[in-house]
Image (cartoon, rainbow, N blue to C red; front, side):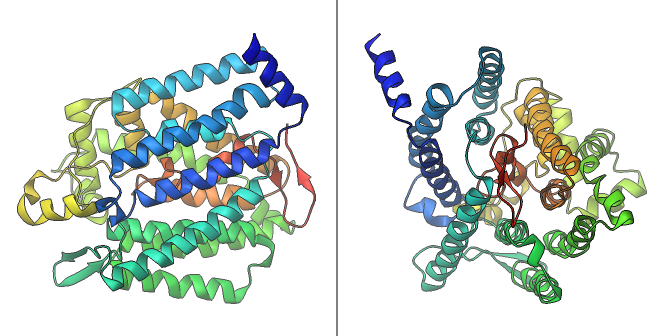
Length: 396
């Protein structure tokens, strides 16, 4: 009773819910980013996870004591949280649990403000990581593909290095959507080739290049171009379509099929490993403990040089949802993305659907759709979504 009275008293004093959430968001992004770098030699992953759980107490407090939800909605929220906990324990990975809490507790927070914080914090951390790796303070892991060297500059793996750049580009595009000009697109074009030159991440280079046509169409749709508005209004369909294609192609993959072999080679063996994942673990409703041995991080880099034949990793976010985290959490997280896109399209706003469309494409080849350090855009589900140049707008 005493605790209830104290909490009621705090609520009546109009605690700044947004400040609580923003603090938590910055801390979780920082800790999540740290886990993608070779700083983990100095700050162990288990310590990062423990600090993350402590930080998550703040958005949970906001969610259950400060946010204004009806009992029926709270029951739905609690059910989703319980599913995320079950998935976390079964899969042995907390990324969806963390993402779920941050999505559900974002009510009443300015989404634009969050993306600004994400962009500048991640950019500063990214530059600092490169700087520290060049100074030799942390490891700059170098990988080799044939005669080509691939640099990660303090990030765990070259493709993760490229993925951070891709995420920063998306955040920039969202924040400056109405101000993107020819010079912006020239920059993205050149950046894509720089990324490929440094990390030899060919597929990541393609996703950066795709920013150009996707954003151009979205901008034209915003300016009421009829054809572009029709095209952009279907951006949301990429999520279920690509999810289905990823699952179907992997499940029915056969090495003897020349078409499958061609796409498997194009995707650097991802289809083959996804097929192995289905054969060994199958579909899961609530999550699976999957034993993976990737080449990312200091330990993975060592394994590549001494036990390369043990490599096994599920790269695609869609496949990870089907096998590792469970179909129920997959339906939840992809449903969030679809809902955000459809809501924005309904209100004739196309910046966020364009961003999610690009993320859905990159999710075919990487696992970062599920990680807040790479993808803060799903928080838009319940946050107050701003339209650049207009007052704060909250869609009901």
